Image: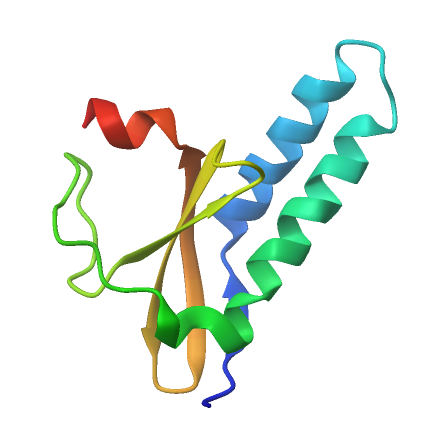
Length: 103
């Protein structure tokens, strides 16, 4: 089984911070931080799971790379969009899973 190095783009980190701040806005600190840590832990599993996830066979409106794949995380609330390149898994975006149905 191939082992990848997971690269999370700055855009994705910014979205994770937004999610944490949104959760914390309900005065349930540190729930946002715990949630984001759990999300990031699931994203890191791509280091060994990336090959088992098939490429998306349809494309949402947003332009995506040809070999984009998706990982549903945290009870299917979020979709992590990523692609592989050589020995890297590059996480391109994280969106609410419901947006996959709208596109």
